[in-house]
Length: 193
Ligand code: VGL
Ligand code: ZN
Image 1: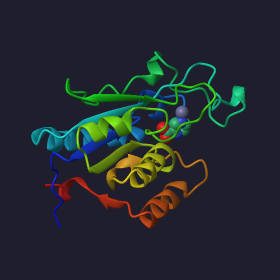
Image 2 (image 1 turned 180 degrees about the vertical axis):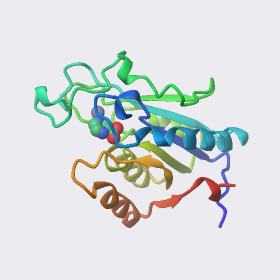
Image 3 (image 1 turned 90 degrees about the horizontal axis):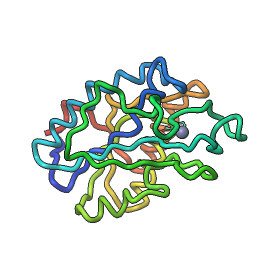
Image 4 (image 1 turned 120 degrees about the horizontal axis):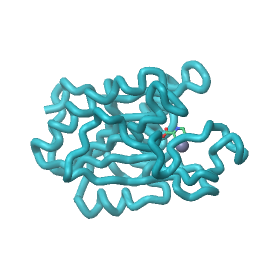
């Protein structure tokens, strides 16, 4: 069945940053695999004038999620560093919207709604349906999708354009099950009209 992208849909491209890709500080296995697929999704949304939102993990150097500050992650996506840049092959059109998250040193924020203007941005644009892809399935994609449902959006995840960090084996599968239980549906590029 085809799903139609309308002007009430938004594409959310989550954290496709160098540090989450092979060679980065917190590399996701085959994280860069999502890049060409997300570029193809962007074409579909741009064609009908639907908003495309890019989120980025944007930590201060003293962020509490880093091991040295009591957290669980290696230092990654530090504001204004090379590792925090988007993957160089990811298209970033002039009309793109940018959301930076987890910038408060004392708060972990996996959801792109947490501590940002994303909800206001989407409401102002009269968006009703979210299509969420990017990195990582088991953290940021999952938390953003679940928050999206709680905020009243209809939510799809891009099954062919997400990749998980899998701290424990199977975390991505578990995340997908959790999202499914919350009413989040999966879609692939060829199912989008
Ligand atoms: C993320 C781990 C640490 C994510 C952010 O964006 O999914 N994962 N910080
Ligand atoms: Zn982070």
